[in-house]
Length: 270
Image (cartoon, rainbow, N blue to C red; front, side, top):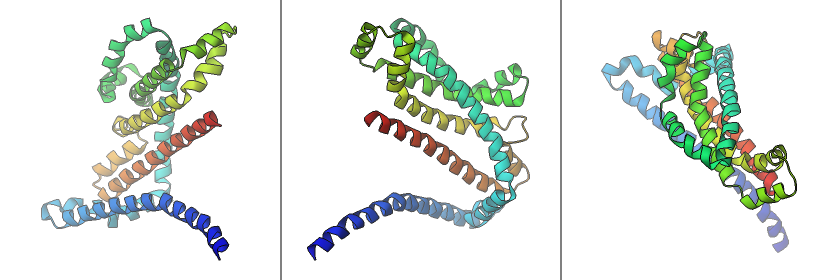
């Protein structure tokens, strides 16, 4: 009897762990849905807010499903994801090498600290008039704004990670005759990978927030354009549905980065 009970305990523990993994997120989602529903009830009870009653879940959730099955969501998301992809790629290709150089050189760190911090504090959307004047296409201007949003978290996390590398390791590598390229490939990049991914996660969150207002510019595609269009035609159920989908897509992108962060951490501890 005790042996059977002992065999059941691991199975029970596994079931409880699985329920906790999905139970807490479901509880949080249920609480958010409940608050959304309460907001809809409040709006419905206010005669002067009658135009906004379709923000409620009863209207927005069917609209969200219709966006999905009609393909409108896929078309809008594809354009936005293409812009965010290019912006994140360009920001990473600039920020990681510059961050490594700043982390390796104390002189460069001191020289760039003030200008980098100054530029970091400027809202990415403040560059919008300059982007419109400089770039020939709307897509180019939007990608530039995404780059300005994403570059700083990656750059600073990279520089900080390089500074945290044990100097003894670098000294040993130099004594063994390793070239800079070799130290970069075998020591620096593996050591800074978790911090770079953490910076990318922060950068993606900022860039995703900037993307929607940036797409209010002259483009005719993307999630920001779809929200602007829904507002103009007073389709508030569609607008609320788009807000919901933007949050879900952003969550999935963040989860993807977290997945890679865990893979890198697992490889470093293996």
